[in-house]
Length: 308
Figure 1 (cartoon, rainbow, N blue to C red):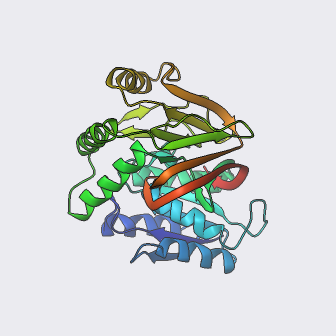
Figure 2 (cartoon, helix red, strand yellow; figure 1 turned 180 degrees about the vertical axis):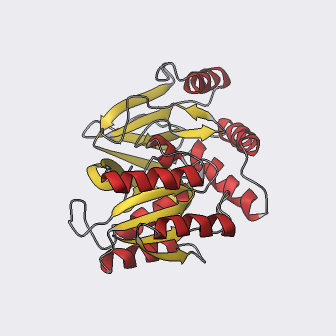
Figure 3 (cartoon, rainbow, N blue to C red; figure 1 turned 90 degrees about the vertical axis):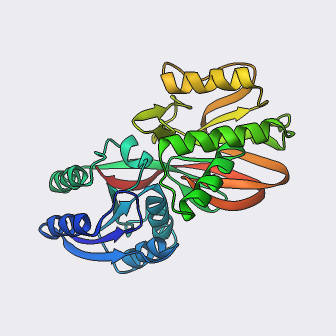
């Protein structure tokens, strides 16, 4: 089996020695090429070239951003269901690794490599549905509003050399909340052919559940959403402290989906549209894609085969 291992050396838990150990193990059962990314978009380029070259498997070793780049690169030259599309393998190397953990892949890179090798030996794969935000594919979530502001600020802090810890994430989330609570809602949501909603503060779109992790704690925003369903939607009407804190507590407890009059929720959604009264940031799989005035979201069932 021909495989390409795409490694992000800047990922949180990726090291040169660890990469060499993983590559050696994989090379014992695969005809393996290794690509170490050097700039933003390089993982997409490597995945695109792997598809064109007829690879059977593309392995992403890095965080969720690396996985997202690899997936988008693969779909640059192949469509869902295309027999030329390689399988995807994932070896976590980031801080959260939401996509991998939602698939049951071990967080430790060595354990994840053994997990992948067993899946390859057993020819075990899973078809997963994906989401699209306009033309950008996403594996686990996207959003406009609060979460996108948090992602943008987290990227800024990491560019200054700060480690992406749960404590830093929580502090940034609180700061962004206070800033947004003082502002006016700027988003409207249209689910399918329904009428657009009243103005909202934030719209979160999930492709699976949990939505993310704070350390080992899963954040369960759309428990009815999985890789086998359509998209999950959770939108905040107001940023008033008490209902927002209640929503957060329910998500962290994981006992059921958040509820209340302060939110709009839907599950198994095939298509939705978000419009903004002014350009706002969009985040996809934890990466900020800049500002948008309107975004079309769609669910694509059985889009990708994953070795798992």
